[in-house]
Length: 63
Image 1 (cartoon, rainbow, N blue to C red):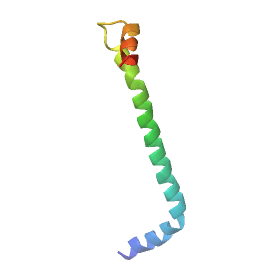
Image 2 (cartoon, rainbow, N blue to C red):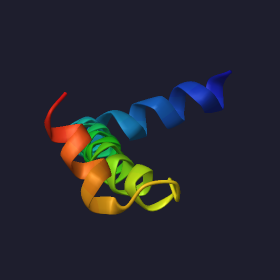
Image 3 (cartoon, rainbow, N blue to C red):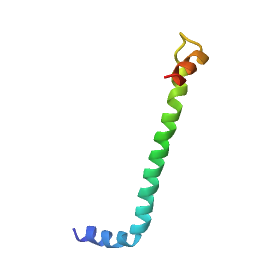
Image 4 (tube, one colour):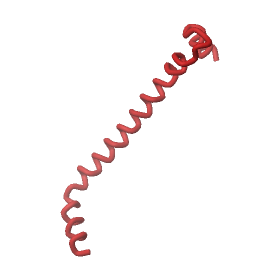
């Protein structure tokens, strides 16, 4: 337990850097989610072979 407390005291000096890294991780996760949500409609257009992409796009726009 004593070594753990010593390591916490050492890590406390880097608290701002740790906080900045957590913020960057959350931002990266949000950007990744937006990227996936932007690609999803394109993938739907590509993987529905029963209609042409122009007809599918027209249906999506007219919803």
